[in-house]
Image 1 (spheres, rainbow, N blue to C red):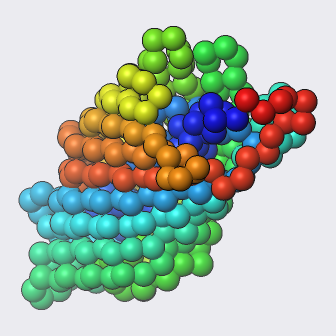
Image 2 (cartoon, rainbow, N blue to C red):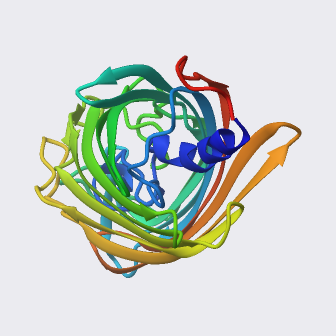
Image 3 (spheres, rainbow, N blue to C red):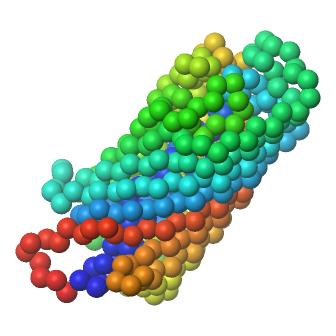
Length: 328
């Protein structure tokens, strides 16, 4: 039982994918609803059947250099920089029944937090004039809920997972403001993940590919184009408590933005590399899994370049034990 619970704590981080607004990137408002860097080590490993809780704190700071423009809040912002601290509590449920040879997981997330965006000037619309003076908008509020479903399989040291997530546009969206955590439009992301984890040498190699599809924001008549994302991780487990390694991602907006509110396609691209450290411990009898990830962005086109940090804590709330397996 103890070994099983330790494994559960270590693997629960793979059970969900986070999605929330980064401060200033490509697309409307500078971000797609899929949060780059949210996947990482053990990305395709599904936790055992049960209920889990995960809490992520996401910290970002970046800027759009020079006179580069960004569509946001029904305006075109010029010379943008921004920062954010957003918390994302998530509940994950992995069903005990088999589904097409694997196990089905469901999760729900509700991001909330602080975001600040500044611009040297704004246009009032695609053909509008430059507004006078600089603009700074700060908000502390609730974003859109994210609902996810995923199925995971394993074959020896190989693990596979496919899934989808949906952005539900009922968060606190402030029309006309350049800072928002909510997106005010439906969105869907589909992804596939693979992990090779050798328990004998402790090496974890993981990768995730996905595509995000966005509906139109009815408040701004703006539809963000399709967004491709790829994330990877190479991590060495030194023992049951500690691991460390490298992480990174690549983003490419494959189709342009559209709608009456889009001045031009605003297709973006960016890459990032960083490092991660994981630590597993117990609080009383409850196993806790903690992880920190740091990313530095580079080679950005029509996107901000910045730095981000993820702080993650995860734990099992209830484990469904197989009836035909004795507790260890």
